[in-house]
Image (cartoon, rainbow, N blue to C red; front, side):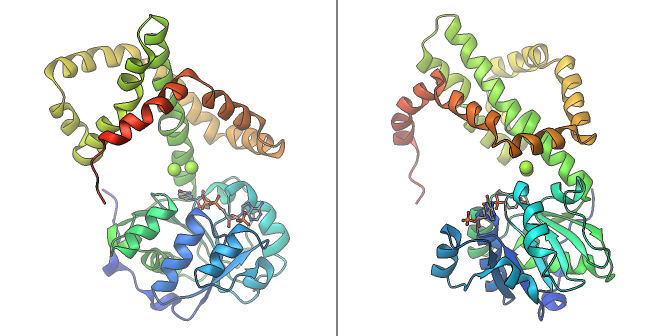
Length: 333
Ligand code: NDP
Ligand code: MG
Ligand code: MG
């Protein structure tokens, strides 16, 4: 197993007297700004416009500045706006105004790995990628814990980029859990692969195909929904808590036998071959190229795809069953 960094491996001292500009106050930006500030660090929030984030940041104790003013004397500049916005932000509001040699920090490797942002040679460039959504990063930190993260160094001009990356990781609470070293390439490629073939794409299509199979064969959509979509959470929770072994131990022997034999028949070697093809498209940069083009055209595929899913039978059935499902949930708070 690779080295796991924890609190004892990280010290805030290397960034204690630095000015940190957090660009963006959304999912991650809001959590990072608050956690870093609560860790005693010197944080300024930089935004492009006086919109929703601006108001929110103000109401939560920050005095937001326009990006160009926030980066002017910042030692550490953290990009926490959407990935597809970062290049324009960099070209228009960061690069022309930043202090020479300031650190450029990311929470995902996309823009650096695919060279949408070409950082100056005299800047340290590193990444801290939390393995959870922003609100969880904040919530765990407040409760005394932290969400684990990956760290990577792209440019280490100062010779202490890793110490600074670990300090930021500590400041947001990640070292309370654990921080694992990676590279921009590995983080970017595995992140895209995961969301495409399993977490978002794979699971969604698997649920839809199973639901449609039952409905097309005349079974009630409500029964199909419970079986092919709703129950997935309970199985995933078991895997999350006890591993795949724990999940298998919790289901019936009939389910174990059926799962072990038919699972391989449905998800066969062909599927893996296509997964490798998907990975190849990520590695060659083809996917990134296609996505940048799609984004530039206003994301028609995403907009239409979302509408299609929203209007699908499984979503209609799911919404009708939601009340019923919510009623059965244990009250945790
Ligand atoms: P968000 O979508 O939550 O970012 C929203 C922020 O960006 C707001 O402050 C918003 O300001 C600003 N913003 C949006 N559009 C623009 C624009 N066109 N120009 C200027 N500012 C804009 O981003 P995330 O927090 O999801 O992602 C930030 C980074 O963190 C990304 O690199 C992402 O890959 C990474 N990451 C995200 C994770 C997550 O769970 N979300 C997990 C791990 C990494 P306004 O209110 O004015 O619109
Ligand atoms: Mg991811
Ligand atoms: Mg991703």
